[in-house]
Image 1 (tube, one colour):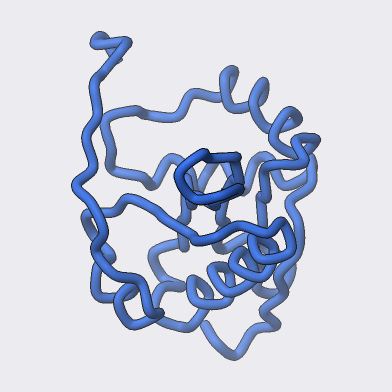
Image 2 (cartoon, rainbow, N blue to C red):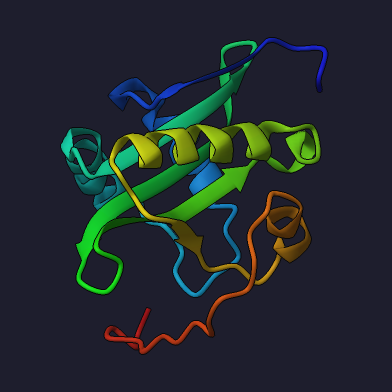
Length: 147
């Protein structure tokens, strides 16, 4: 994999098919559906508090990261949250995730975020190697139980 040309850039509407393909690799409660995805993508691309970054190898999207910043009261301003980070199966462990996260951190700093946080069950070793530490337990309540 690493013999290809790796590029990071902001996502564009024309990346929709490739990002959707990767989003479907999440083994989570929700299974992405195309109509809601197509409704959300343009809104995220236009949202100044959202950062949707893609990693391409030889022009094909092989990974993406969606992160957001928002204001808080307790942290004296903005914080950043990684909502989704996905690297295509055959392209993992080649530095793509690290590069995406570093680029997100740079963006979050430019927005004066005090920290970056995320929730994960599968990549604790990866995030720990990048200086992230366990900070809290993640709770969730399903509002649409039929999903």
